[in-house]
Length: 434
Image (tube, rainbow, N blue to C red; front, top):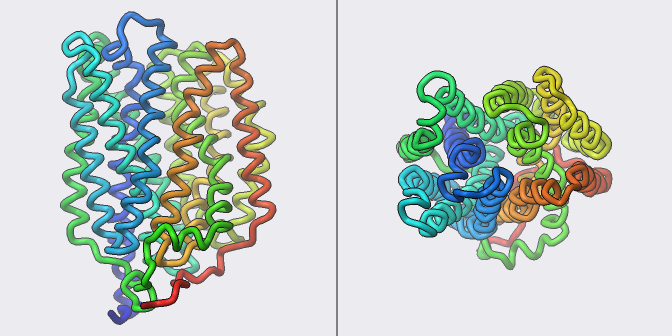
């Protein structure tokens, strides 16, 4: 299929960005509804336990959802590399819709006993399967429709939408907290409303994505390789795969620490109320979201490696001071500034990670390669970040978690120092065509 004229291609770019990222928004909204609302439904599924133990149980189920992400990355990545990015993106949002609907409707422990947490686990497994394939496919789609000198900018919108999804989750909670419901109503049944809205939003995305165009790079003849989308083809790029995973290590842990766990940390460790925590995190995440395109523009102009080094250096040496001060402060303004500082450091990773990994892998295994390395690191490190933090708190060594995050950042820093710049990479196939 011949490539479309550049004018037509450029005309479709804004629509392609919206089509790809709106699904990312809904998926991350659904994913983070669990995080932001767990303070309110933990007692529904795990009654008669201490607050920290309840949070630990819900965090454990959050981590279980990550177990399915590598499988989802493989299945949806395989489909995306063989059949097209569009079909995989439709499938991923369908799975997320079903998972959110289950959480919205499942009765509590008082009604159905152990079946309640079992169904909660099943819903998280479905959402993990969905999210495992969504990231790599969306990142691939955005990179393949963008001009070479704008790839980081376009790729940065993945985290814009991921953060916007989280903000919508926080915003829906704030609206329920301050405007619509009483505390008793929110704790009893109101926490289900955002999950129901997420399921409805996923249905809307299905209609939007139904008419999306396939990327021209995928449709080019040289991309139609005999081993396209296979694990054997991925294994021929072992060093690339390991490098992509190394790129993710520190950023994954730091991102989940400052964007997701910080809300619970403010309540459970720093002594803030749930309402204060919601407002502080919402304000910090909003500015974090706005920073993503700016870091993407910088990465397009000076390269991906310097921006990653920004994160690696400051993440390694700045995490412990930031987390220590955050645990000790009782000022909402200082807490906001500290979380914002951590998030701006993480921006060096979030704004560039999608484009860097797509530039490392060839077309015929791009979606699978990006998806799997992202899913594995997210499952092993991102999904367990809260569990590690809460277990260390229960053991009386909460500060060890700060050093754990710093160590992970240092691992990625070594990779950034060793890697080559990828800004000039051509997104093309390398496996011989059939």
